[in-house]
Amino acid sequence: MKEPILDNRRIAKNTVMLYFRMFLVMGVSLFTSREVLRILGVEDLGVYNIVGGIIVLFSFLNNAMVSATQRFLNFELGRNNQEQASRVFSMSVNVHALIALAVLVGGETIGLWFFNTYLNIPIDRRYAAGWVYQFSILAAVVNIMRAPYNACIITYERMSSFAYISIIEVILKLLIVYLLLLSVIDKLILYACLTCLVSVVISLCFYLVCLKRFSISHYKWFWDKLLFKRFLNFSGWSLFGNIANLGAFQGVSIIQNIFCGVLINAAMGIANQVNGAIYSFVSNFQLAFNPQIVKSYAACRWDYCTGLIFKTSRYSFLLLLLIAVPIVTYCDEVLAFWLDSVPEHSVSFCKLIIYSSLIDCIAAPLWMGVYASGQIEKYQIGVGFILLLNIPFSYLVLLWGFSAEATIVVRIVLNVVLFFFRLFYLKSVMKFSIRSYMKQVLLPCFSVCILILVLVGLWIYCGKHYTINLYLQLLISFIVSAWAIYAIGIHSYEKKIVRQFVVDKLLKS
Image (tube, rainbow, N blue to C red):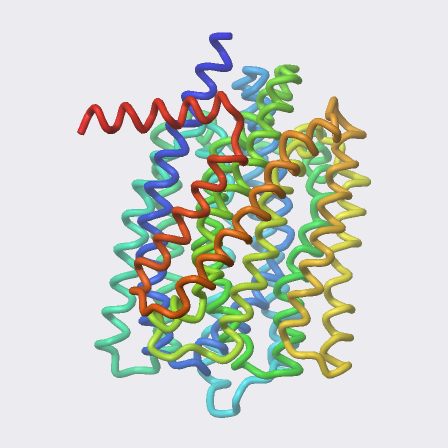
């Protein structure tokens, strides 16, 4: 029992550090995104979002390699094999260098051709958009080379390093806003340049931290054909899923741009900012659990691994729901308070994307279980096929005259299909009970949703005749959601832990 207890304490400590990082980054991001929208304007922000999205399309190979690096590092350290972990790290640096070169060449050829031929950008902003494109390529190359060092920190579960680096990052982002206010040159070009420069500085911080703290991150040149093939086998199958995932987001954004113009991209950018801030509550939480899922699988601790997947799925959904309910309920008021000018479609986009994220967050631990097993061939084919359906279906709904919101509805429907595919695939590759998952995860989550829907509906109906401060409205919605989660969303032993935590805090105060 001692080892799981120590693992749980490590997870708890890492979660606290990640939440410190999250609140820091989220607070500054909400402020800076509002100021950037005000300084650049809706049109320039839309240009930045769509042009930067092209480079994201070229970094799909890197996303596959990041998954492979984290998986192999976690697996080797789970087996306590330091020497092999060091070889994995050095080989991953070699491969990421090749990816960075491929992105650079692809971005300056195919990407540049697509930029000049198909993107719907106002004539008077094409020169600035060209500079944005070049700075985006450079930032993508820098971020690709950062990936192995990022994976190393996650593998060793030293989440405090993320928190410290985030302090530097948010200071630099605040400095960007200040320099934009003072600038007399084209603000869109300057924003792209400074954002790229921040990527360089933060990547250097990751490099220095890893070099000082982790012996396996001391790069040594060598080329291992067998290890390279293992990387390619794992990342190759991840590649299709990553291409499809990017297609579901950036590909649909390009389709929206072609049909609706850059104003829609600006609204989508705002919605993604809000969703990113909310989803960070869950992603940071899952980041603390993911290394333990892989390591426990590698150490053949099957029951502990399955228990982690169950808990992470349920906790992730309930945590996101707790934050999402107040935001969705008062989305109009929140965006109006946050932004000086709310782009059209932003409110509906925000709500629909949050609904989609609720499905994503409960499914994320399932694919982490699949990645731990290493049996991802058929999984990625199935996931990739389902995700790629976003592109033709989104094109069709816009072609048939539906609003841009219909593309996100398509995503929601396909995410439901994808969730059940992941559920049944995980059962085929490891000891996993779907019946237990339904009972311990889906049933309480669904029950909480019904109860919150009823309680919040009653609150809105009873309170519509009164003028209530926005902060109070959000607080009441949050309290109602928290009570519903406590009442039927968590188990009896978890309620005991919550009560003990509250009592301890009250006694200390």
